[in-house]
Length: 357
Image 1 (cartoon, rainbow, N blue to C red):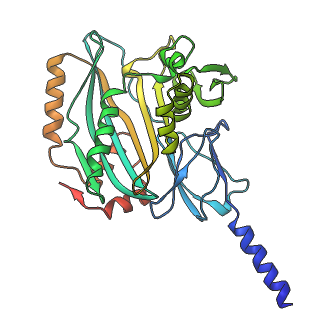
Image 2 (spheres, rainbow, N blue to C red):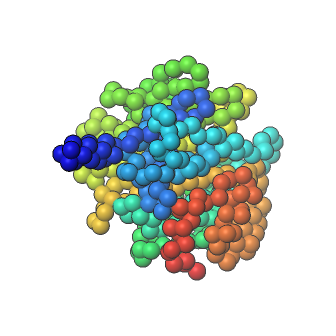
Image 3 (tube, one colour):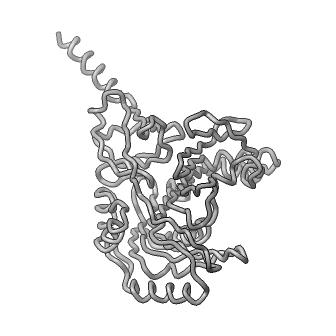
């Protein structure tokens, strides 16, 4: 009898040790790529792949799901009947910009930056940033990034590098609709040797000779691009014979993925004032553990202005948010603009870190 009980115990342990896979989908049943999966303590478990799947939640009984375009969700893993979770659209929108009488296209953004070493959050920064794109000269003109923010970190030194990368993105990419550039004839399609396949229902598959690297989802109002950028970049390195870069990326087990959302005009086109949100995710092997960097950016105000008005706007924001913002103030700003507040697990992790004043 004891032998039978022992064997039963071993079998139960083996069953419980089996990797728990979950798949995250939208209301149409499409897999949601780049969902961040967190434990209740704020530690990072991983992110979903292009099919919306994470292969193992590492024994977590409950997980928090976050994604730039969907409402955060706390999930009881054991209660999932088929291992599938449906996330609800954020339903986040801005007033449409119609008149274009001035040379600067203005987009004000709210950003969040998360940096992990291993699974632990080591750096968090958030704030408001003014951006303008000179339509005539095709040049980005960004406002202050060092003000209008709350900044928290455990690891001294990493903030400089990671914040600089986040600043570059928040200041530079809002004018680029990557989904349009990946369509036939677009610069990105030519650069990364990708093709598009229409799978029906507004779903376009992006692929290269080695397989699928992303999807474009379109409806009458919006375009959502989700892309495994590292796969696209490494394939390009291979085609062009850039072995040094390719080997370096492979050595570091480099990953780069992103999601981007733009509104669509009646003619199907979009420009800077149609930017809605994006999220960028990097991973690589660093000197003291795997580094993971996540940047979320939401448009909160947009329109057109001239050079003088843009300077006045920058000065106004710099003065208004001169004192670094607390987590409560950051959350209040986010929720007042229809953006979810910081999820509790990440908030707790940020609260454990010293605040940079």
